[in-house]
Image 1 (cartoon, helix red, strand yellow):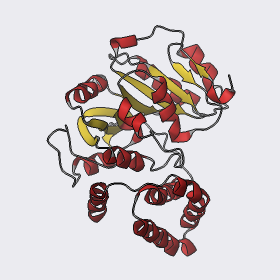
Image 2 (cartoon, rainbow, N blue to C red):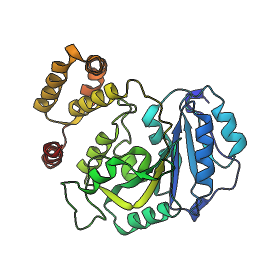
Image 3 (tube, rainbow, N blue to C red):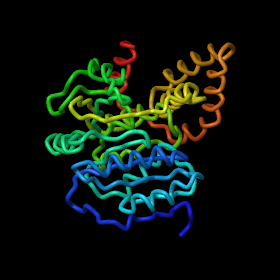
Image 4 (cartoon, helix red, strand yellow):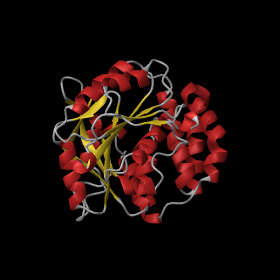
Length: 302
């Protein structure tokens, strides 16, 4: 089997059909943090099956997972799939619902059972965005309030306010809906990759909502993440080129270009976008007008 398709199944007992929901964790060269996260996930009362996608780690991650958590399904693609590793992990699970964690995030006890109940009760629900509590102090992530107060309102067949954004490490998806739209787009990697997935789900008629009574925990290390702002700007622009009207994509490109002379982050974002633009145009398709109207509604509020 080629290394890029290698898959290692955990040797421990499988929860089988005892769980409606599984967890996918993506990681790269953060072995210590990952093992702490897996310890926490192993203690959850739901006993979810867990798939770890090792995005080309060189710090012994795979060996440590095999030794410390033999029941985990380990996927070793042999290269960095970035956010698209979540798609690979979801495809490897067979639960109807899939929650995402990063190597520094996990779920509160009972949160996954609550999420599964909501998916069971609301058949159009495609993605649930949880409330996120940060650090040992359990401080609310600022995104919680923005999602709670979404101007998109609440649809009668969905369990919370509709949103077109979320935090990937605090999201649960209906696996069939997630795979139907292709999961996380490989062109975007990490950094604002969530919006495109939300747009694609909405375009297919799936509901994307915020449910604050489902709670995820996040304990970031606080270290600087160089290049993240440029990636966020690049991915916002690529999302426009992939899905939005041509006029909007050109407008966003022009706005970023205006900042480029005085801002190296804007120059980096533009250069990265230009390199990826041929691939984006090859995969471009317009979203329905109703979805574009909802995006514009959010933009007017920001």
